[in-house]
Image 1 (cartoon, rainbow, N blue to C red):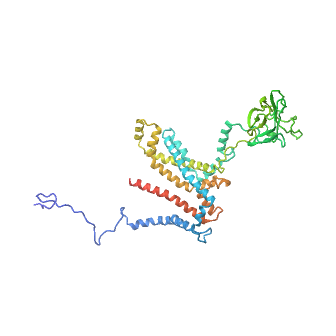
Image 2 (cartoon, one colour):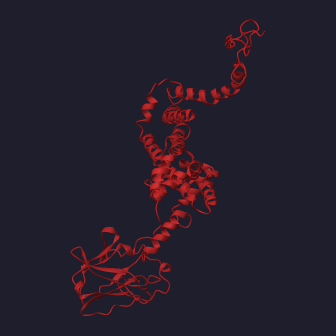
Length: 461
């Protein structure tokens, strides 16, 4: 007969419930192991070299920098928080703080926006992969090399600087250069300097009497090719006439204020008749230097506007005090827009195309699809790019140090550069330099904490 207590046995007995095995106790129990089957002390042993390196290369420098920031320049005297007070009272360091704020706001935003635009547009371009390669290529260039490149790009001389070569070409397309840069009237003559770089006659013009306008200060080799001999203007009873010419003859034998043989006409000079501060008539000198104004110009003073004499346009002072920081930020964006584009394009590849197509079917245009669907779905990736670039720009040093000229380096100063200058670049005050380093650490920590929390939230999903 089968035992009724056994499972599956016949009879009316109830089968006994299986009992879960309890923990093994006693002298023969196995040692506790981790989930991977490795004892904790073995894992700690393998982690020890990494922990030693982390302590030597990260923890110790941070602790030493905090400690050093509490001492004076040579480290011999304890000064407490005095170095931090210096940081927030020194004009040069405050300029660096302001510039860092501009960098943190502008550079990551512009680079991320361009990366987003490039990533979205390259999906619709036939040669999108090649375009991405070109945009990403600057990432292969070091900051040092990029700084040297853009120092040349922003050169003031249009024959060397690409930026000014383009600006000058566009300017000259729509605006003519001055006819005779550097020209001026003879001292103690009838023409006198007036506001804005123009020259105005002291006397008034009249009909029937030539109103000659002699100028000097133009080298013979700077005259236009084919400049003609100056001619006296014919007198007319109903017009104001005169001649504009270079009142100088080679050899210096000419007479002041007299059109001598060999003296050249100045063609293309603008002459204005001014009454009560208003221009009532204007004319341009011809090839022989003569000009003619209507009779209404009688009684007016004659003015030669500054546009006749201003120097050649040389472009924009990109590395001047006002534009040096935006110019350097532009070079940074040139390098890092490709980085943003690649990360955003990777996130864009994971966006469900069904959502985009459904929005188009429902009547949304491309801008609405981009703004209401694409951007919200890419928000986590955009945050990663922004946070990464914000951390990166807080320690920007190379581009500013290389691109900014010596005379405007103070205007482009940032905290990382100021740290170097205060500690090693002539300041020789490692106490203040360490204080700046601590401030940079405190500025980076909130961004790092936000990024770590975001990564943990995503990891729990």
